[in-house]
Image 1 (cartoon, rainbow, N blue to C red):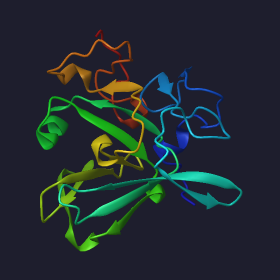
Image 2 (image 1 turned 180 degrees about the horizontal axis):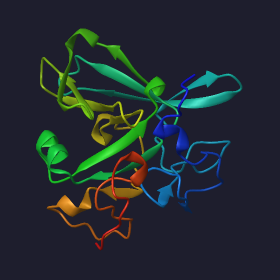
Image 3 (image 1 turned 90 degrees about the horizontal axis):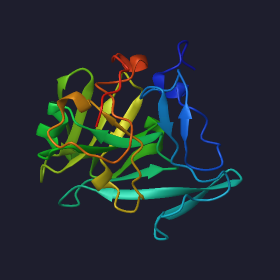
Image 4 (image 1 turned 90 degrees about the vertical axis):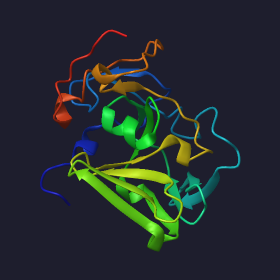
Length: 201
């Protein structure tokens, strides 16, 4: 057990009855967090029936499968993500070749490479983000964030996961304003080294 809890351990409890905004000063991504859980006892609405389920103790957990563009590298994400949202920073835009990156954040233990680990390559422009891709096709899969204690599996990598964004980060850098009513953080939450400030849509 780590002496100092990782930022991920400060997320609100997943055991809330329905998806809602929770005002808190301790949750990463600022004062606003949206749970992706609908209830303790079942999958959230919109989850695709084809998503695998497996027994873990007395509970059934979902297993979401994904792979790179050519299929050489496959992975599984088990359970529920810690958060989902959009990142507007220039690095994510450049890496994804798009105007915004849709992220799903997971505990590292929930993400496993199940095929083609020898084809998995990593590029780290900074120590904050270890971007992983397939060395055969170049397909992007996920980004490990050591400082956050979380792994971002790109939303497009997990087609069976019902993506439901809860927040925008690095919105001060946006090139695609999105008027969806979700909280817009200037950069990152204060708990993760950002200002924690929100900005208008």
